[in-house]
Length: 276
Image 1 (tube, one colour):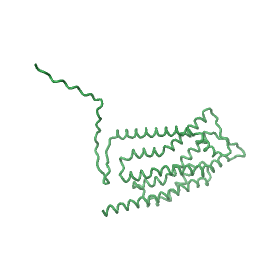
Image 2 (cartoon, rainbow, N blue to C red):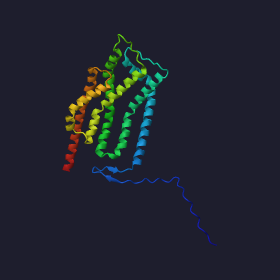
Image 3 (tube, one colour):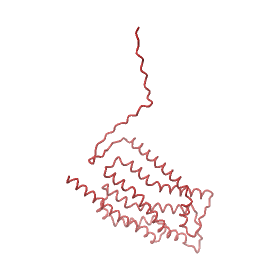
Image 4 (cartoon, rainbow, N blue to C red):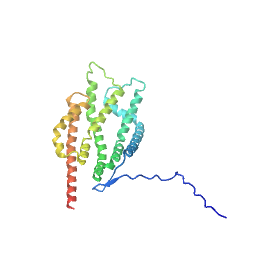
């Protein structure tokens, strides 16, 4: 009596590990890997980073909503003796939401910049990754310095001038939405302007800007600083424009110093490597 061997059960694809495709890569002189990914993989990575960034902003906005009333009181302090009004039923509600969102955006900025770094990191060398990570805390620090400088020095004089202008003829009763929009946009603009040293430092480490080039560009940057100050400063008087332009110029000089220190460290490392 002949017996037949039992048939093997077909394997289902469920539970199988997905094979990770191999992409062409080469090793850079510093030992870091450079992998050539197709455009679809870059888009997937970008989507992942954007989703994480959006979730971070949502989370920090929700946290900001718990103390948004205190935030509005701090911003309202800049109005001085003037009373803020709401002319529409939803005006106060939407204004509070915007304040919470802008605060949440500022709170999540270090995480957002880190996500940007993670997206760009595969294309950077070991040295560029090191300096990029080192500059991340400086981005948050200089932005905070700009916001504080604007809140305590620039905005009090600017709002006092604008609200008090023509007080003999016009009684100022600013709307809360317009006033806080003005304050938030101004704070954000000055905070970004204070990122000048960090941007110069990163460009110098990437080889785009050198101390020599920056010193040659100095006179043009002084003009640009006053033009930018004239754009972001709400008042036409030269005093407030100078108050904004001078710190930007000082930050540019600090950026030149950072670039000089960065190139000096690179030159020392290159000499040590050549001797070895």
